[in-house]
Image (cartoon, rainbow, N blue to C red; front, side, top):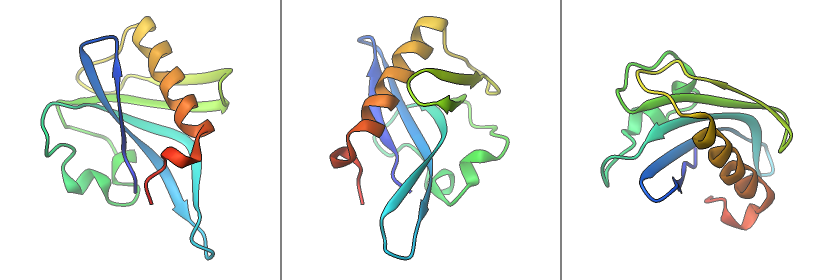
Length: 111
């Protein structure tokens, strides 16, 4: 599973973990759910979060910010703040822009 990193504003560093499946031909296929974590250290995220679908379970991690699910990429999305911290409306919009940019540019995907 390939996490990707971006900043919101000048301060908040985010790790986004897409739900990803690998098909028989080896190409990564991204779904529409992304778990968000505050990036606080170079070794973050812990490897157990990166295990397949582990990030989709209820998180007790203090850096967990919730998840974004897209209904229509770039147009309609839902943010669920089920972590100890949450994003503001402006931060959510910036995160959505970053995720859409990532989705629209497969060259950014790490294999």
